[in-house]
Length: 193
Length: 98
Image 1 (cartoon, rainbow over the protein chains, first blue to last red):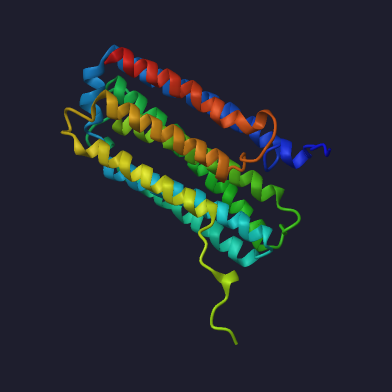
Image 2: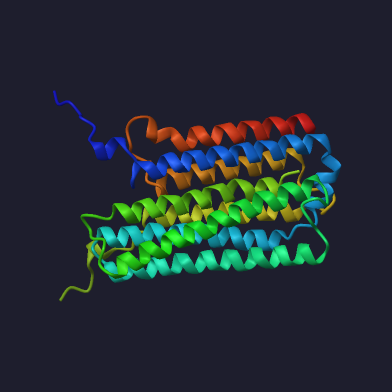
């Protein structure tokens, strides 16, 4: 009979454990935000439904596809580094940064459109949630891009290898968290009614 | 030189399969959201289906992209457990407001 002993690698997620504690804290805040939106909507369903119809679903789709593609690029960057393909890894990270940039541009255009139409945080409860929730996420995308840029620069300078790439895993899981949050935010704010 | 090499057969990586599934589910969510008249929306049933898609997509991100698949112990389920909390609260709020 052979006993299976779980190794450290089997028990703990990739990357630095501290980033996972940070991610759980971030996810808790977003969970409260999502629940607050859903229960605030109960108070005035007609208002939420009316103003939700003013949002640009095409832009939201493009942003969703950009973030999912960005996450995929990070997965491929890590896979390339595990195979010691440093140049390919850096290229995948740059592609992920490109997807993040696309997200920021599209979202900024959305904000510009709403601000030009006179929409403010104080306009109504729906826009208060829409602007604060999406802008909070927007700031996380910027943070994720700063982390990915630092990881890409270190990878370019030979700071990671097939044996040691914990920093790249750590940056990667943060970026995936940003994607994960948007995957809930998109249907909740733009589609569900 | 052999013209065929079985070891070089075309295989789609699991992460690519997950990526394609995520793109497909996202496109379906968009189609559900845009198919109905703007002032009517998809309705409760389709909205809950879209919520289910979102939770499934997030679970796939946790498992395949964040690397939780294959872990033993509590970290294996951390994202799934997180998803159940906002997912359950959103479900409750939408059902109660229908």
